[in-house]
Image 1: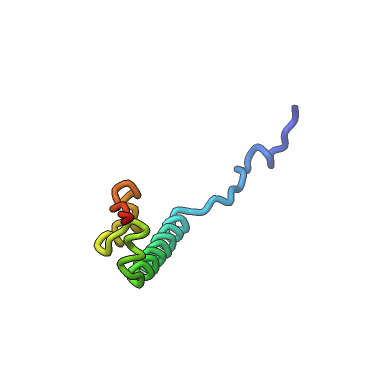
Image 2: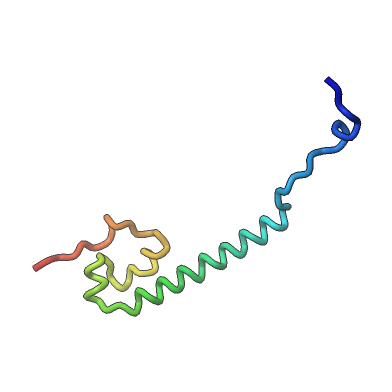
Length: 81
């Protein structure tokens, strides 16, 4: 088993991003998620009350539903007459 000095002495180079890159990426992902949530909330607010009722939401529950705080079992069930 022979090894050269170059293979023993040099650490393997990794392409793992540094702490600053990970922090920057996490910040951009958080901003992107914020804008996606705001767009979903705006889109749901455009719907009329009957359509919201059909999908099991009341207007006051839109933001909580988009943020994942209301599960489908907690949302108001539509009543069919």
